[in-house]
Image (cartoon, rainbow, N blue to C red):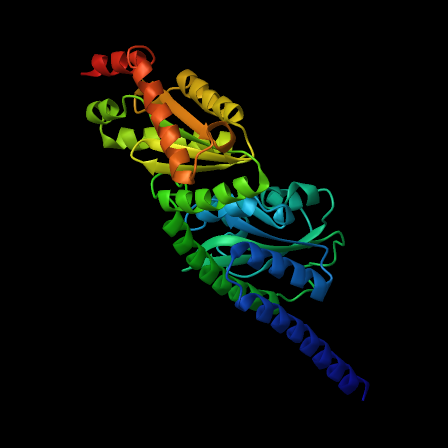
Length: 354
């Protein structure tokens, strides 16, 4: 009789665990954004199973590279999502497609554990996440209790099933966000495209007028870009544009937004910043590019830029299109005044190659 009662208790216990897993699956199946997906998943697992540390590792390359920018900006996800090398994940999982439980030698998987947890956790459950059969991430749970995830005493069947459901949801979410990303981004540089610029400026211009705060736009273009293309080829030209875009993002991303306007022209927009503050950013980008030529094959290609800006407070434009027009006119005035000076370095370099 004792054995029967014990069996019944075990069945009820397993049913309760299965119900909790079902609740988690129900919560994540309809989510359409990756930040909401990661946040909901980790919080639901913590709530239902009282797991102190839960996070998701994602590879920092295709097909998930488009998620890095948006997820890393979310303060609530700082310890819940970690972008990691695929090689590091493969080294841990080996060829296994099942959950791995570890409670010894955790230093071997330091790279997949958020730094704030490394001195705390004593056992970890690591479940593989896949898209189209390829390892793209890990779903991780950890505890300070070394017996929590003991491979000798714990079964991973339900965790394996959950990982499959997470993988399906992750595939759906990333595909949806990839489409959105491609619709709003320039495919070469990854910067927001011209359509997004117009939408953003229309909104921010109205907000600037209503709240009486400044709004500044700055045009940037690459000096002698056509000559670089003609001499070194379009592949080099593409790398020049990507190089400028990366530097633009680095200087602007915490203060505003950067866009590829057309060809070798870029724009950055800084809500709440003055004309003078925005020009300081443009000068910093210019100084960096002048001091750090692009390494292309065996060449160090010098890059110089021209820029021109305008702001709502200093120029009082009637609409955002006129704001852009003023900035564009200043760009070309600046560029024409410098034709015989700064770009000379670029032309001298190109003439040596001809």
